[in-house]
Image 1 (tube, rainbow, N blue to C red):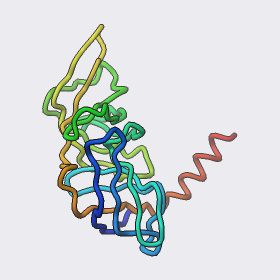
Image 2: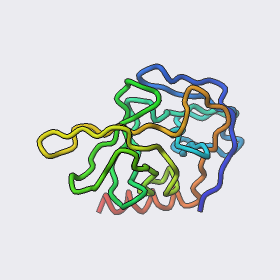
Image 3: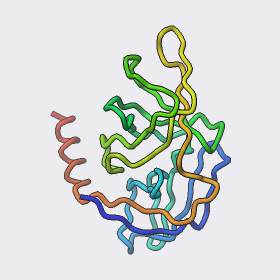
Image 4: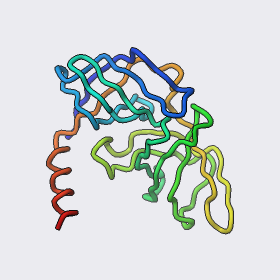
Length: 173
């Protein structure tokens, strides 16, 4: 179902509110908008704009990014969104209180998207804050080091268009 295009990072930002990277692969290499970008030890983001020989990527260190993730030890899932404070960690949202989570738990991709295969490593829970018997904040220390990105892998999902068309058709019924 998945194949990968190896790309080199030629421009990288990680200290802004809306970080992006530029890669040395484009449409002639099979890159399209809305493709996942990963490392062997983490996720990077999703392709945005594509030219013949280059593409830009909205990294997970971007205020507009929201990625489906889950706990490796169980199937509770939520959204990974960045609060803009540290390039080494991001936050986990929409986790039900009955999810038995602890500092040190591993977070992986959830598989509920067309962008990433399931079980790609993301990071570990570094802090859990409670308020009114709910999770106020869950911090995730990322496995990926965004200050040293070099070689990344663009995810090609062979069935992406078919899945998107089916889901759009179902939503419109």
